[in-house]
Figure 1 (tube, rainbow, N blue to C red):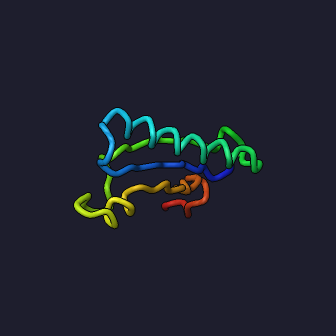
Figure 2 (cartoon, helix red, strand yellow):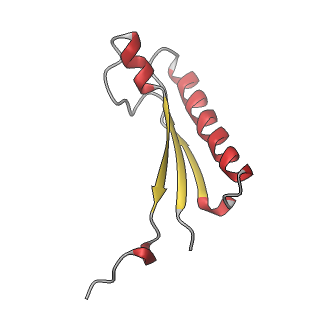
Length: 86
């Protein structure tokens, strides 16, 4: 089985809440479609937008808000790759 890939995108708090959800979800979907175009099977992909609810730090300065605007690709291991427990 192939390892799954999850594109997860977050924003800062500079937009209204509904705008952040749309922006972060759209960014994650764009990454997912790019990976699909590169040959990653669609069944191995997922996307999620986290808006401004999963910051890596405070949103109190421009520099810190920039850090919260991100898209991460999480690699999810196949359970069959683990060593079986006795």
